[in-house]
Every structure is written in C-alpha cells, then in structure tokens.
Image (tube, rainbow, N blue to C red):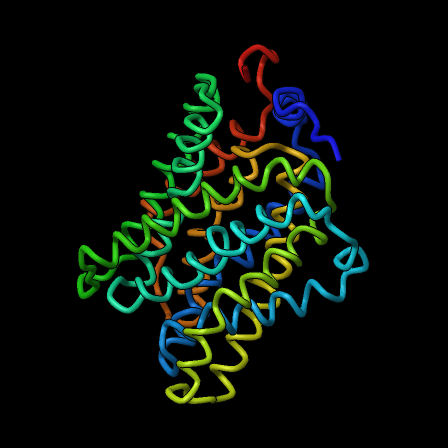
Length: 307
C-alpha cells in the first residue's frame, strides 16, 4: 500500500480552515482531557500508579471496539509501527502521568500538559527538518502564555512538586509529541477508529505485566471504578478517536488546539467540586488562550510556509 507524499498531505492539512466540525471535535477533546487529571487523582488514591495504564487502556479499547470501522484490517507492513505507537503514544505516557501526580499537584500537571502544543511544534519541526511559520510560532507562544496565566493562580501555596515528578511530566509530553509524528503517515491511510483501536489494544498488552502485578494492592471502590471507566472509555477511547479525526483534518500543530482549553476546564471543575475561586488573572489568561487558539486555527498564508 503506497503512502501519500508527506509534503503534499501536510500542505493540505495546514491550508484547511477550522469550521464547525473542527471546533466541535476540539471542544469535545478539551472537555474530556480537562477532566482527566481529576480522574487520575481519584484512581491513585486507591490504586498504584502502575494500575492506571492497564485500566485506562482496557476500557479505552472496549469503547473503540463498538465503533464500526474499528475492526477493519491494517496492512501487515504497518504492524511494527503500531507496536511502537502502543508503547510511545499510549502505555508509557499513561504510566508517567499518574506516577508524576504522586508528587506533583494536579494543577501543576495540568499546566505542564498545556505546554503540549509547544513541545509538538518543536518535535514536529525537528521531525520534518523544517521550521513552522512565524504565524504558527507566534500562535503557539501566545497560547502558552495564556495557559500559564490560567494555571498559576490555581496552584495553592501548599502545592509541591519534586524534580522527578516534573521530569515524568516532560517525558510524557515528549512521548505524545513523538507518537503524533510516528502516527501521521498512518492517519492518511486508515480511519481514526481503525488506527486508535489497534494502538490502544496494543497498549493493553504493554501495560499488562505491571498492571496485573498491581491488582492485589488495588482497593476497588465505586468511585475508583467509575473514574477508571470514565478515564478509559472517554479519556482514551472517545478522546483519541476525536483527536485522530482532528489530526487527519487539520495537521499536527493545529490538532493541539484542544490542549489550550484543558486548563480552563480544570479550573471550572475545581470551582464546581472544590469551591475554588477564579481570579482576574485567570480570566485574562482565558482571553489570551482564545486568541492563541484562533491564530493557530487559521490556515497558513501560503503553501510555501509549510515547506
């Protein structure tokens, strides 16, 4: 099966404007991913960090299995790439995030995750051996500034983070950025649910040894089980299906737009469940985030800037 020319596919992606469908996909992902840090925190109260990747991957694969195109075949020559994606894109970051949240406050983890567009832009530039346009670079930087302004006020004075926890978060972001670039050629061939189901199913296999070993130390409460099911079915199955669809429609950098809004979702969840207050600096940050997202959603001025 012949792969489309990568340059041509990239030009088509960056010249596609954001319409109703693209914004709907981005909104769904932001809502789901914005709540994932709270769900992880609930799970690790009753379970070891090594249980999270297995539980998340199992329920994510089950959710994707019900989508009609999930069971369509994938060519044998792409199987090796799927095994790499299952580890780099899913199993490893699924392990690193809960491991980090053992010592890093949830609000700090959310702020770090907001840096994903910056990490993806850098990794993609290195991967493609080209630099993003000035417009795209400026949009990413503006969005990141807004994320910092949102997240900083939400960090309580009692929050703490150690060096290893921060390094775990950085490692998870790098895994996502590398995985996105490894997956891009397959996105031009297969439906999002076909690719994502295989990758998440392989993540189950990668996660099984540590996850099964952790089972005797898991306290199965209804709250923990509900959080695990939600994190898997929604945070992994549904969200990665939406992400795969958005990635195929808009390209690598602009598919990161939902991460601009995840800190916004996290703050509102804090207000709803933890009586946290939103101060003026967070509101300013939200406005800046919206500006960065709008600039990122715009197509490149000319095709030559994507070369």
